[in-house]
Length: 262
Image (cartoon, rainbow, N blue to C red; front, side):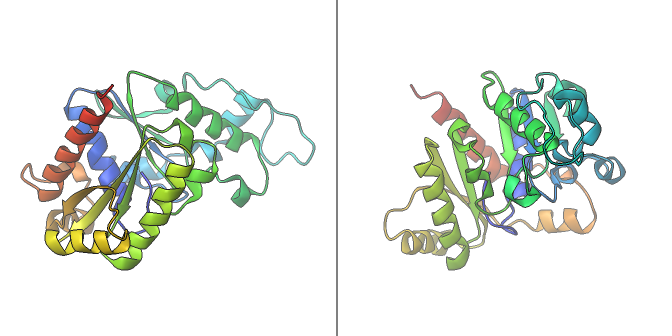
């Protein structure tokens, strides 16, 4: 999942994870945002969500797996290939029987100033789960283009760029999708969220993409989401007939269909 901040990227990621789980898939949801809040969207209680230490900030785990503690100083030696195959099971939060969440946190090396042990651990974990074959892995990435600079894009089967139905938001989405395509992501899908008028939204997409619109999926505006956020509730509390749940369910069906193509 990519997109600029405020488009509803985390909301779509959470609903997509729950939708795949309801279809019988084993789902691993990864929060790779520097301000992680996917846990709340998935319905994890606030006190438990606030206590989560992202992998990229977990100094004890980083020391255990890489042989060095973050912040020990320049010139230290540590493993760039730490053991990560058990992290999802040991540190994943069980949301549903077949849905787990791991908060990875931001792994943008340029922001950290160096490749520290915790960042190395987080990167190794992401690369590991991207190679799994029998699960659905959903990455709620950092807002913006950072995810495409991490050497991970080529491991993705899909890039879903979430945008609002505005020229500015769609223009940014166009740039992100172009970057993803250039880095080898085979399937790029534009997800236009918060849509009140389908015809106008599609006209805007055609205008911004200059008549060469990508595969596009529209998600309707849903007051139920606003109400849940105002009350501090997870998206698991949305009513069954919620417009956004219905539209994300249809998106799930599209992704399953694409994955089954030869």
